[in-house]
Amino acid sequence: MNYSIGQAAQQLGISIDTIRYYDKAGLLPFVKRNAQGRRTFTDNDLHLMRTIICLKNAGVSVAEIAQFIQLRLIGDSTLAERARLLAQHEADLRGQIADLEDTLAYLKFKEWYYQTALAAGTEAIHLVPGTTEVTPDLADQYVAHLKAQGQEAAARRFRQVKDYRNRDHHH
Amino acid sequence: MNYSIGQAAQQLGISIDTIRYYDKAGLLPFVKRNAQGRRTFTDNDLHLMRTIICLKNAGVSVAEIAQFIQLRLIGDSTLAERARLLAQHEADLRGQIADLEDTLAYLKFKEWYYQTALAAGTEAIHLVPGTTEVTPDLADQYVAHLKAQGQEAAARRFRQVKDYRNRDHHH
DNA sequence: CTACATGCTGGAGTTGACTCCAGGACAAGC
DNA sequence: GCTTGTCCTGGAGTCAACTCCAGCATGTAG
Image (cartoon, rainbow over all chains, first blue to last red; front, side, top):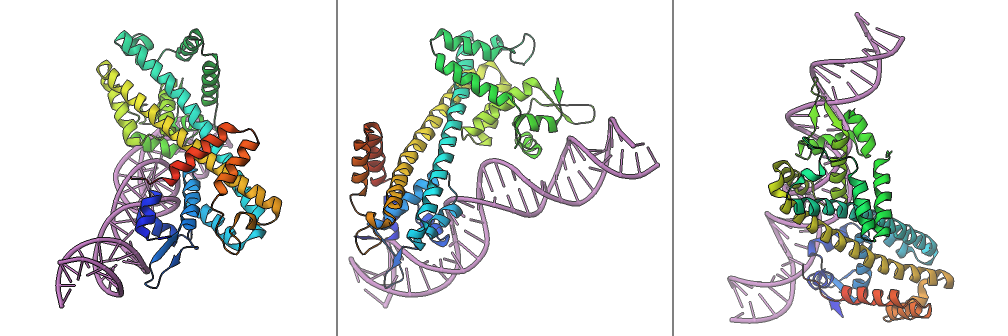
């Protein structure tokens, strides 16, 4: 079964222009044309494009995906290199997920801040009296709250995030 | 304790230019200046900026963070609205994490593909003989492999991802 | 007194990933 | 034989989030 660019776009959930952009960028060397010069997509093409979209979702740049596709074109001699690239992208992805989990822990802390402030009717309960500065032991209060709720794991996680964020970064 | 823009940048792990960009964008209305017109950052300022960086990490745009900061400036009357925005961002973040987990499941499938191909010395074991098309039941083989390894949960997850990806999307 | 580090502003430039457009080809339906 | 729909190309435009620059001010070290 063959599909037009419009049908392919619909099935993949991306725009026609995006497909043409990927083609220009060298991501779709396997896509053939018909007698009129129009692109025709096979089921196998769509399968490959799903892998491309997967890599894109994993935060891999178009240039890096193009490199991967070029290796594929060369053949079996590049199998090890391709496996290595995928493993690298997997490690990056795990890192991204861990970062987002940390961000989530911090966001929950902020939500606790607003839930308690809302319950009190004012943000003042978290501020040093007469200022707009938050109380210095706010994070400790939150950890105590988590522990009181029996959420030991969450408390440990938040402590780590907090300690990490307060340490100097050197990028 | 007060810090210069350079010290703040170092402690937060972002560049001086980024801080100035955030200031221009209205994210830092709370930062004061000294007699020479230079920005001075308090510990509390850094705390607030860590929250901003957290939201940025959660994929929130600068414009949306600016809106949040404006609400904070107004005071207690906006507490409920701020709590609502945070809850929304948390939901978005959970969605992002789930998407990345799906991507990870798909990436692991591809890694299995390359591990087995490497073991065989050729990609041909996954292709329809004489073509460059992957065998139609490749995904099923992978699921069988996962089950044989006792990874029932991973098998279920992959099946869902696969089914989802093969269904039409309508964005 | 001069050099140097650090800061300021307004504004221009960069990057990646699209997204849109003008101008044209072709097949099908009326 | 005209309109409509879908496709083609090269190239320009957009957008967010920085990133860099010129030109200037100021505080400190030698």
